[in-house]
Length: 284
Image (cartoon, rainbow, N blue to C red; front, side, top):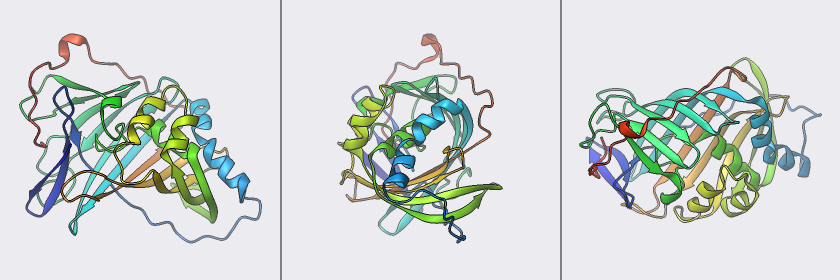
């Protein structure tokens, strides 16, 4: 169930699962700059094929620095959440520091950052609030969430975001641009969650299968930016929630990747450090 909490005009979201909890926060938007077209860029079927392969290219790249942004729009109100960290694509795990907005909607103001660990089949959160001791982690099985944790945690798992592009269709080349000093190809299209789930690796498939339940439509518009090595440098995906108050809240998730190959080792919490008590459903 998605519950929205209005404070001073801001909207936050919380997803409550059977074991108690979860955060639902939400990110972003960057508008691309215009650039001259590259006649050598893939188009048509070749463009769609390049976008669909981006997850495999990331796994070969090994790891990357990550910046995330998520924005929810509902009832004329927008709330943004931002994160920063690193991700290991071979281990399918990462660590993010997620900044929550204050009541006026400013990210990072008035709240302790939430530390998130993304791991195969699980999301771990520290500084969760809502009755959880400050030194304890909350563990949520991502397959138990209606959206497979594509937006629930306030940041889309970078590998899941790339795997979602395996269902890409109607892909068009929008031109070359500069992103962080790197020349990238900008592609726009839609992707089908169900098709992506069937084509995804075993690491991401359970989350994408779960995600088919949580949105109004399985069709997700996207903008993807790939460098000359085919690595995904940025992806922006737009979701429509099936639940919530009011229904139809839109969520835009943006993931940016850089610094490929840098060490991104992630240590999972010990069992004794995971909170097993009752968790309040309200957002922090």
